[in-house]
Image 1: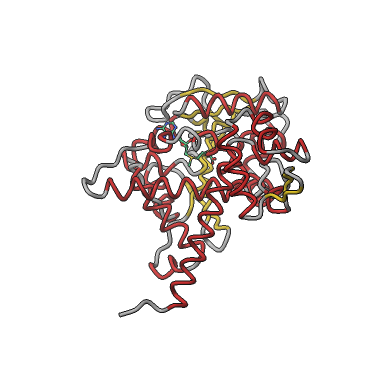
Image 2: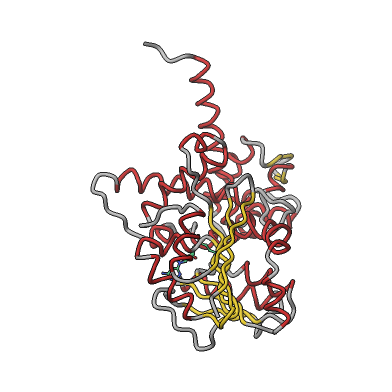
Length: 341
Ligand SMILES: C[S@@+](CC[C@H](N)C(=O)[O-])C[C@H]1O[C@@H](n2cnc3c(N)ncnc32)[C@H](O)[C@@H]1O
């Protein structure tokens, strides 16, 4: 049977879209868009020199980026088009997170394809297998979620203000590049913050970003495995943003007990997770499709996505009193739970 020609053109268009994102990715992670934005116009060689890249590669990249409409050219001088400008990571509403997500998805899909043959689940280090992807993982998450956190979630979680009022300590477990604590510290000037993450590269990036934001001292970061947590100072607040599912499969009960025991009395956890839907049909909605693919990639890392009600029920089992708020059509869940007296 022959494939429906409409179907074939639709998939060809999708493949072209993926290819265009691949070309954009090369320009994003090697600062080619940002450098050309700074220069205004440049030859391929000039761009390569200014970006510190190889001339042969950059010339080929310029042809591809021109073909795909990211660059215009006149008399051998390239300049950014509107879509090229939107690829600059510092641009308002930059397209950078879409491009990075797309390359990360391709990497994870290839790993899943191979690992399915044996069932091996190599864990977190899969993210670090591609030298160009890991440094962009934090900026991608920050670009996707920081504004939503600040504008929608912060106002819905009064506990942040309480911690600020008593100059309390907020600890972010699995903090990535530290954007969550930077948002909190900017918004709540007395709150003190500590971020912990298992990847040294993440912590180095988090510390540098906090320093350039002028938050050094009040916001600290340490490389630490968050299993077996033993804080020197008990926390007023323990936050986890997209990190609880990374430790769930090693045993949620013991992990949540350790959170409880590292909180001051009446301290609270604020757990933000993508909310795995309770019906398969929900996976057909655009947000559900993303969750379904993410869950496949989480499987590679030894994780699975969680339903908000299973998080709440495990918290209840260790003495917390959880309250769940759903956002973004139910695809994002924030569970706030106070430690008992
Ligand atoms: C999906 S990322 C979320 C990062 C950040 N919270 C955010 O919202 O952008 C999960 C983070 O948890 C960290 N992580 C996972 N397991 C960990 C562990 N056992 N100890 C410390 N960090 C861990 C990873 O390094 C990664 O930075």
